[in-house]
Amino acid sequence: MSITLRIILFVFSLISFGLCVMKIKQSKLKMNNSIIWMLGSFLLILMSIFTDVVGWISSLLGFMAPVNFVFFIIITFLLIEVFLNNMAISNLNEKVKDLDHYIAIKEKEEEDREKEKNNK
Amino acid sequence: MKVILIIPAYNEALNIEKTIKDVTENTDYDYVVVNDCSSDDTLEVCQKNHFNVLSLPVNYGLTSVVQLGMKYAKKNDYDIIVQFDGDGQHQAKYVKDLVKQIEDGSCDIAIGSRFVTKKKPKSMRMLGSGLLTSIIKLTTGKTIKDPTSGMRAYNRKAIDEFIRNKSLTPEPDTLVYMMKKGINIKEVQVEMSEREFGESYLKPLKSMEYMMNMFLSIIFIRAITRKNI
View 1 (spheres, rainbow over the protein chains, first blue to last red):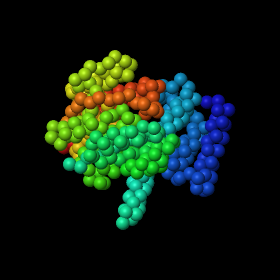
View 2 (view 1 turned 120 degrees about the vertical axis):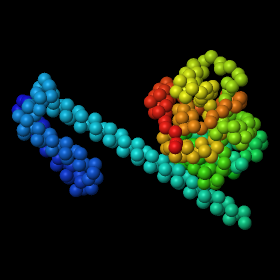
View 3 (view 1 turned 45 degrees about the vertical axis):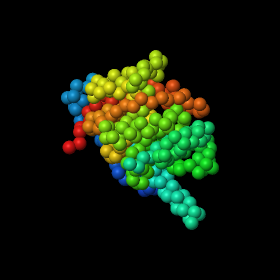
View 4 (view 1 turned 90 degrees about the vertical axis):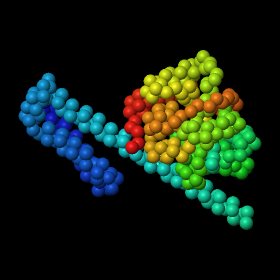
């Protein structure tokens, strides 16, 4: 891995790590959502420091160059994250729909009650 | 048995009055209009005429509307639910035939089908319908001649199944799921008219996406459904 890539990786992962910590402190991010980002950026920091290990693993797995291995890790990480996000969105969608139904039924009940009152 | 018609309405201000008139004149069943957060004055029309209406504060589409209708019917202890379009395509006089089939106990879901005794006309839309028929035949071995028909009657058994699984939509793939669960489906010949005003839930541009969804859902998800033990 070239020295520039190492520096870029190191700096960016430091920034994202710091950002995570800051956002949790400002309570704009939930702890369990951010843990995966913290782990991810920590992994990137490790990879930019211990390039020998990265080179050894990538040759073991048959990658053409260590940098490909790094990209592979990043892409895998992002794909997993997008998938988890999608699941979370579906989940939220379902919850909002339940609330939607709840409101509709409650409003209906109230209306019916008022109608009964007026009839009496 | 207590019967209720669920009438989904999304921007049907021009059609809804006629539909309800048709329902109240030709049947003596209860009904509930489910207004899916229409942007026109569907709700105002319903309130002005004192229709029995449920109004959703957020638009979520047909699936959500039918699910809400089922919840409402369950809460008020109805035995049979009939899904009936609010756009004036369905004719209330045929609802009796569907309900009768269920009351006789000859089936759990009755579908108001256009093509039991009559032949399908040839058009793009019917080509899609034919494809769905053959894929349902392939996965379940049973023939549903009009799988996209929106006029369906469900009994308690089918309603419970519907409420249990939140991913079910009021679409053909659910029929496959139901058949795999051992629910009897029967088709009853009905006639449908063309809609007079407004747009349908299924716009022509969206029908490609709809077909893709149905195919993937039927083949990869609903075809592998296990029967309740």
